[in-house]
Length: 244
Image (tube, rainbow, N blue to C red; front, side, top):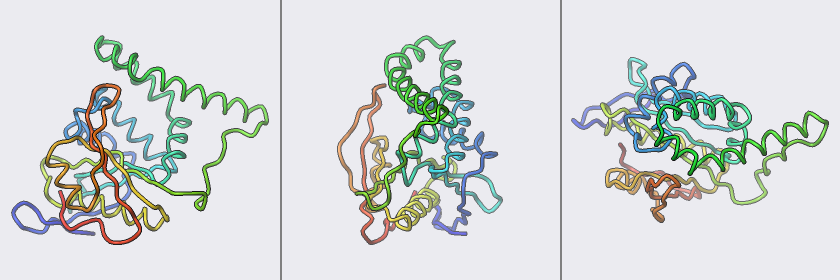
């Protein structure tokens, strides 16, 4: 158990551990309430729950949960210590089902369907085709997909993809606790750096600045969303002294 300081100065006890598949409906609601501006969030809580379950099931994914003293889910971190292998695994295990959910959700919403077709369909289709081609090769006795690079093959970068804290308990220390645990795991795995992107609002910037992350450039997604990139070298030191 860990503890963070709440807005009233009281200690807020938290339990950190892996996100469970049974919690993904709840984590989807937290996702939608905190990162509703994201393109993926527009497909609704049903899609987000399936997306989170796919993350939990990926052997190379990292899905952490923060729970209060009563065991209620209050924060979630999705990321990976080996992003390339993680996304290959997610595609292999859940790609077609997630794509089908996207299409079904967009079918009754013309504007969302248009944005999906224009900004994502080509990239998603090519990724799915590569997976199916590799699967066919493996089934025919071929070599299949190449293995992930070894730990000593070069600079190793992990990522935090989503950090979400229930609005009712923000500034409780849950966000910091999740980031700190991710940094610990990344260092233990021998990674050289962690990266993330976050919406460019001042609260997010203050949070990561206080934790010692370095801001990079602003990025614009294919769907027009703006983000700020951040990175954290892992050669030594801690992740910061203040939390969300």
